[in-house]
Image 1 (cartoon, rainbow, N blue to C red):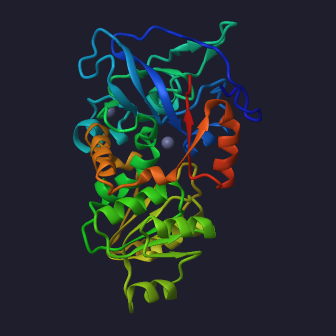
Image 2: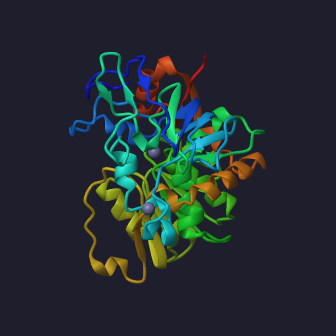
Image 3: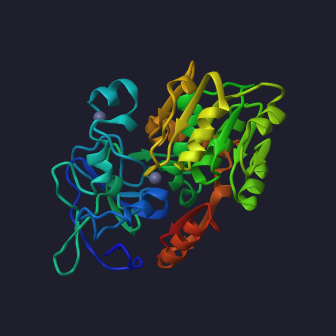
Length: 356
Ligand SMILES: [Zn+2]
Ligand SMILES: [Zn+2]
C-alpha cells in the first residue's frame, strides 16, 4: 500500500469487498512492476492511499454470477479493462476504449466505488487497472482476466499483461512488421526490449537499439538486436543500413523531447514512428518532417489481449520470445527494493512474488 507520495510502500491488511456479478476474486501469484506504477506516486488528485500493481498472474478463486468465460481454478493474466461496446472496442482496439481512463487509471470502478477499505474504514484506491495487484488477492473484471494454459510457469507471465504486451504489440499489432524490414528502438527498458524480441520473432533484418546505458546495450544485443548505440546520428544510421537508407519503423519509449525527435528523423517515407511513454515531454515537429510518414501514440500495444496474450505465451513456450530474460523476482516485502532497482535501472522488470 502506498499512503503518500514520499513514503515507501507498506505491507498492510485490508478488507476486500465480495466480487460483484461481473467480477472475480483472484489469488495473486506474482505481479510485475511497470513504469506507470511509479508515475502514480506523483499524482496529486486524491488518488492515494492506493494499492498499485497492474501486471498480475494468478489463480481464480471465485467468480460472480454473470461471469461466463472464466471459471474458478483458471490460471489468468490480468490486463487492462475496457467496456467492450464502444466504437473503439468494437472496431479498433480495446486499448483505445472511450472508458480507458475511468476503468484503468482512476483507480475506482466506473460507478466511482472502491473494492477495499483499511481497518479504520478508510477507502483505499483499489481498482488500479481493474486489479490493484501488489496484493495477495485482487478483484478483477471478467474482461481484464485472460485465461492462459496451465502448463506454463504462472509466476513469470504477469508482465504479458502490460509492459511486454506494450512493446511486442507495437511491433506485431501496430506495425505488423514483416520479415526483412528494419526498426530502431529508443530506450532499452522492458517495453523497448520487448519490442526488440518481437522484431526478431517477426524476422526483422536490422534491429537497432539506442540507449545511454552500456549494460542495457549489451542486454539488447544478447536478446537479438543487430546494433546498439548510445545515440543515433544520420551518420550512424547510414553506416548501419547502407548509404542513404532510413528505418522502416521507430519506437520511442523514453518520452524525452530530443529522443522523440531522433525517432521521427530516423524513419524514411513510408515509415511509421510510434511513441509510447506516459508523461512524455511535448514534441514539436515541422509538418515536412512527417512527409509520407505516420506518427502515432500507442497504448497497450494496440492489443486485443484475449488473443494476443495467449499467442505470446505460445511464442514463449516455443523458445521464440524469451521475455523472462527481463525479469528479476523479489519477495512482496522487498517491494521498496524492487522500486529502487527499477528506478536506478539495475533491474529491467521486477516481479513481486506473493509467497505464502
Ligand atoms: Zn470501450
Ligand atoms: Zn503498465
